[in-house]
Image (cartoon, rainbow, N blue to C red; front, side, top):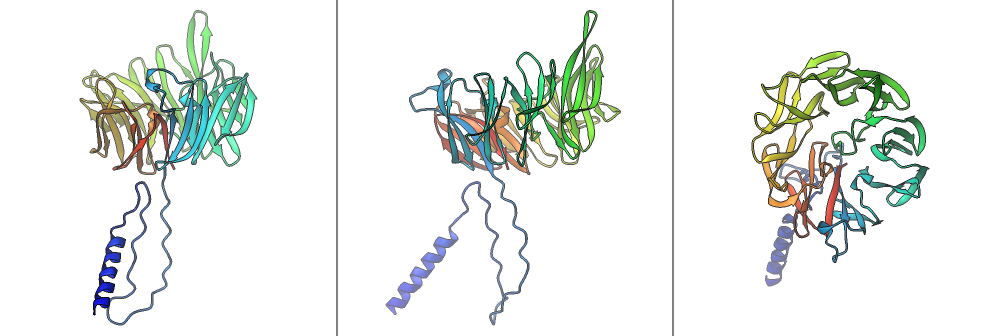
Length: 407
């Protein structure tokens, strides 16, 4: 009787231990088990096709890490390590020397791609292994990897644009200036637009006539000119993108804001006295939106269509970053010192920082595959935060985050 009772107690304890298990942070939970029968006599399982497994979505992050003796906030460290994290766990650590340039690395499909200029050559590496090199110096505003082909869009110091495939020059403009940079988190390739018809980008060139300078913008498909857009005097081009085979652009024409879809000029309706800034084109679901902010009548960060304000966050504290995918949105608020106060997902506060963290780059925020990812660097100390939807994870190291990538 005693032995039977002991066995029963052990069985109950084991059952409770199993039931108390929970999936680890940032991991996809398993599907719940289905019962085979409805009671009475045991039934043989019915053979049913297994539903397709939901794809695992991972949150990658990159960061600079320094020896414990280094106070990186007090100056510019000359050496350290570049980290690649996957769901908070370290995947890769690469040594760094000399000037640290966060825009010279990016995460693509779970791999860390880096570039550096050394002895007059650009050296491009993947996870620390050199892939190719070429002569000159460029900052990659566009970067895209497709199987064994690496597409780069470089801005040269002092002007000039070069489009390359695996380091081989395919197109060059001696005085071109790119509209977009590597910080464009809403577009996979930075300044690139990868569409069904090819890989697109846009740049501007100054046109000098007598004592006047106007700008002409060229939309490129690889090495071929797809469209030329002259800009009138007194006008400003904010953005050009190619999406679903259509060329979109947003312009300020003598104080009025326009979105141009193909050949259709769409007037953007604004509030009286509203002065828009940082107007960018952002795909959201099945539509193209404008992203920007205004200071009057109050600071407002917004997404809008030409005739409709889709989403706006206004008032104080000031919103430091706002992302949207057409169904969900996320944003961060900051105090007067630029430190983060809170992180919001679909209007719900998911993390309260109270000024203890900073957003070191707009590349540290992303909304992709209906997943919201944020990497916050501690304003003091080493307790940094990774945030995914409503989950938070503390990461301790002496350094700062540089980017996130959801894949």
